[in-house]
Image (cartoon, rainbow, N blue to C red):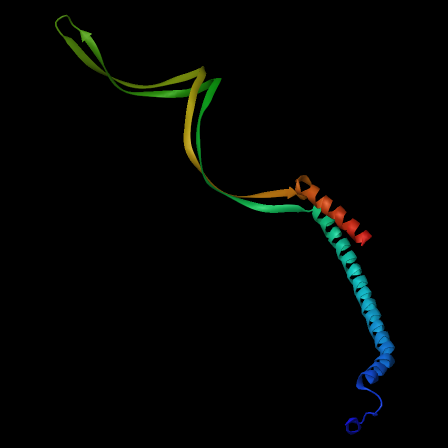
Length: 185
């Protein structure tokens, strides 16, 4: 029966497998070790590439943060609304007003004449020009109440330097840590 299979009649099948196993074992182990070393080398090359990329990106980001720390945030803030204004303004002043003018007086006056028996009213026409020249002292002591509503529709420009905000301390810490990472990695 073993002759039909092509096996020598005196060798059992297990011993033949052991012979093949002992012939191929070093070659298989060598191939596996070589493959393992190649995978390790490839992994280390990739780790080196990742380290270079991380170092470059960390230093680049630290530079960008350094530039951002000296920036100014500029915003236009819209201010719309009504503001009620209620106040009293005291006015106190003393001054003299010089008056130089001619005052025309026109009209009729009735002059009462007493005759003893009756009182007559005699119309007298007037057409006069009276010159007036005087220095008149004027005293003003008043309080002027003001009550109104002011409409506002403004756009106020607001500029905030980042270096003047608490954010600067956080950015400085982040920049320092990124520079350390870029130098140590």
